[in-house]
Image (tube, rainbow, N blue to C red; front, side, top):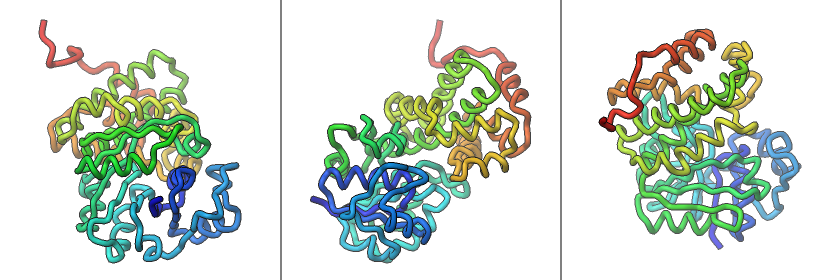
Length: 335
């Protein structure tokens, strides 16, 4: 049995906490939100986000960050990406040397263009940072629906330890040394998912979405490889796998946000309807900045960003994508 603390009591942190408890570990959930702490303590259920999923009385619900970070075998960061740095900074003084920290959030810090693992490491310099990602909606993981993810670490030993803690008959975990690729795949797919939602919102078909997802993974891998990721990673769970589930699922907040945009709602109205952080919006701007840095073209990300931040009409964005100049599908292939 390991002691595992989840920093962040939203749907994803709660789902993984429930899973880890079922795996026989001693689990703590911490939240910065008093209302969330009170809800989880009193109802033993995230009634709005994970209705019907009971939180065992053996799981400690904590509002003190020092307590949540002290004497833990594993600390899991599950807060929304805009709050990763702030939370890591507050936790830094309570973290022991060599502490294993697993980031399960997805995003890119738009100010620095750092991955979230790099952000955590920037604030907590004495820890052993890993990432767990893949096609894994909290709504399904919390109910034991078969799911497969991947964990990336700097060492094989750490990756295999995390694999052992999380893996069970319904939750299969692979290991992969390519942390950069895993993080960028998990972050950039949210941008493409916004575009997929827009396509559904304006009533386009399966052909359109298939084209979008295929060219979307081309954009993701093009940027990811330039940033140091590996091609194989983008063909795997945090690349194609996460892209498929996020572009097609009713559970995907990024797809749902795109759907509202496609239906004619403004970005501000869409944020109100979703009621949670829309990670793809933050990642869209960061993706374009990274594209400039690495001299990469990302036409889908460009159009998504224009819709979000420049009030571009969604039909015009689709038209502009289709009217781009003729190209060969892969520049690396020759006749």
